[in-house]
Image 1 (cartoon, rainbow, N blue to C red):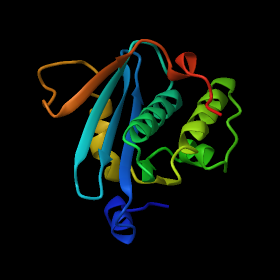
Image 2 (image 1 turned 120 degrees about the horizontal axis):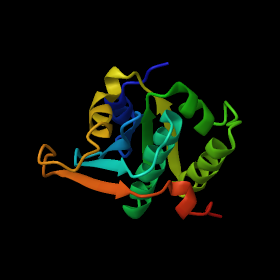
Image 3 (image 1 turned 45 degrees about the vertical axis):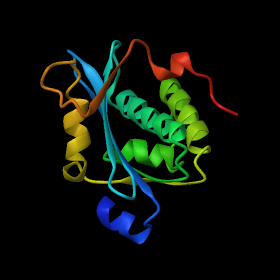
Length: 166
């Protein structure tokens, strides 16, 4: 099922929209986040990983980074969009993460999600997530990055540096 984020925000004018994508190759891995307020204010973030990650791990890193940003901004109503069917179904407890590393990511994600009173995770098509996908591939801090894009580098996976929140 594919949801159009713009029409979803029209149905709930108070919801923020978070589009995330993780990317992993043999050479590099990273994440892209686009957080948009109901008024249209947009925050774009590129995260470069200084560690190797699978595609699913990169997706979770992106999701958790987005939730941390939402928590920092005290967002109370958030629609989260991702194009990975497996990760979306795991975050919605439709699939169980059998891999122990993904299970840790899933638990940490759920702990951050619980801090946002009104939230939902929705799957969108890759085409609808193209902006976040492009950002996730800009994992080198280069002059090509637009000055309005926040760049961050993680040296270790988020699940190694944080405990599940209670």
